[in-house]
Image (cartoon, rainbow, N blue to C red; front, side, top):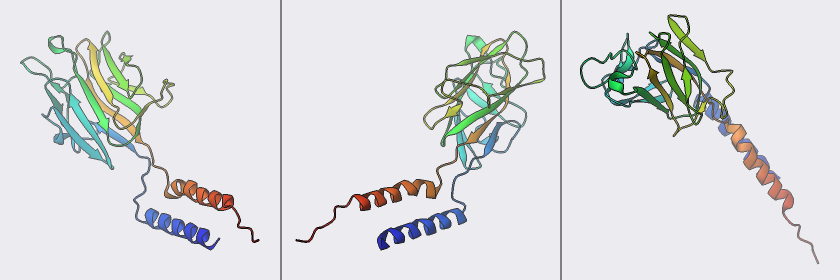
Length: 212
């Protein structure tokens, strides 16, 4: 019993110290795109590059050419003259798209596109879900909310999975921004309780020694 008590006290002290240092992961709403310019220059004119915001690292990769990310545009600059670098489009018959991966689990909540005209369409793939086809609304900025969508696998994106945003038909669109929620990690106490329960169970199952 004394050993069990000491173990419990040590876990509680460790969890208190962990929380006091602020090291425990929490859920945060994070926006990437030209709405939040800080850090975009880190990936501008690169085939692939990463941005870290609020502890979450997102890696952007263009399928052709280079990323074009600055204070006014977020698109792809495809090889050759004539492509509009402010957009994701189908320049020279090639569907431009950006693939985004994250170093922590996230849930995808919102997408904003601009310069998107009637008759055009975009493609969106969230994690392991099937690819969605998006069409524009009658607005300067088209906002797509995914917080209430009933996808087969939900709107979660795990490390190793990806978010894909691309052009399908028409003159394309500019990527205004997208939002993700980070997924909080289990608390220190929550992770430790199963181990303590195992110790208690083993103690109860320990056979007694009978004197002869």
